[in-house]
Image 1 (cartoon, one colour):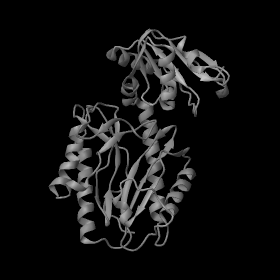
Image 2 (cartoon, helix red, strand yellow):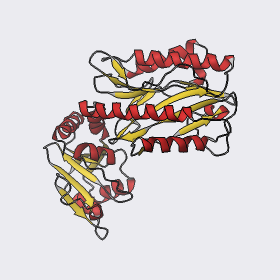
Image 3 (cartoon, rainbow, N blue to C red):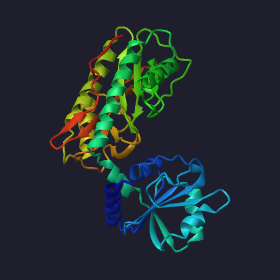
Image 4 (cartoon, one colour):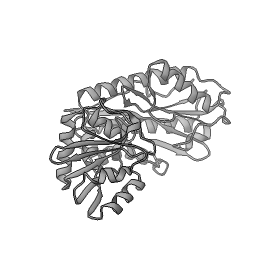
Length: 357
């Protein structure tokens, strides 16, 4: 068990006025215990109390006895798992993970009417927000492998291939570099599909001369995620494509340059967004500038105009402005940054210059 991390969570609980918290996100359980458990439809809960008591509730199917260094309460499919957990809880407020399935939350409320569940994830999110030196090293290594993988993919793009051909190519190249898997389904988009920020790669769309190509990909290395986007062009881009690309490239640079300790993440969003608005394409930048990343690809904070986090050393998040012209094409340039004591480092090194293949 990572005692120092548990202590950070307890500090967060105290700020929220919580004496007990149920942590159920597999990533957060891993963060605190060092054990990754994928429970599927079965109940998993790590009980953390402000007194320092920690206890893991898990199904015997996961064979955790003797394999975790945290007090363990097991149950099987013949038992009421919620009742087993309820017996160890105190009346009053209890923090519940924002992703804990309602089937468990509702049953717990029915069995213990004196409990008052509140969303308590902020206590864990706040601890996970600041990466330690080892976590940052893993994220740097993950990004380096992602850099190498996307370069290999770009080098193998060809006219006539499908978007899924590109996505499959990424998965093969990532596996060759030792990745344990993708941090999300790779997004490889061609032509007009690039105007959909989260277009799912398909086998119908073929790469044609003059197409923009968005490659938004990430892999998992030592349990930590990477995430990066590059936009390239098959053949000579049009003047409009060049103009849009240059705007997004400048917005990415402005967003990254704005990252310093003490700066609200909303100002990072503003710095990137202003470049695109001043360039006349503001209505076509239709998503937030970025998101936190670590054990999961999307973590707190939300780097947007309404984001409330303040940049502090150890925070890692994406800067990914984009412009999307419906029916035509889109451009996105994304990098990960890590806040340092005196600024920030960019975890990706793949060129952001306009690239023709």
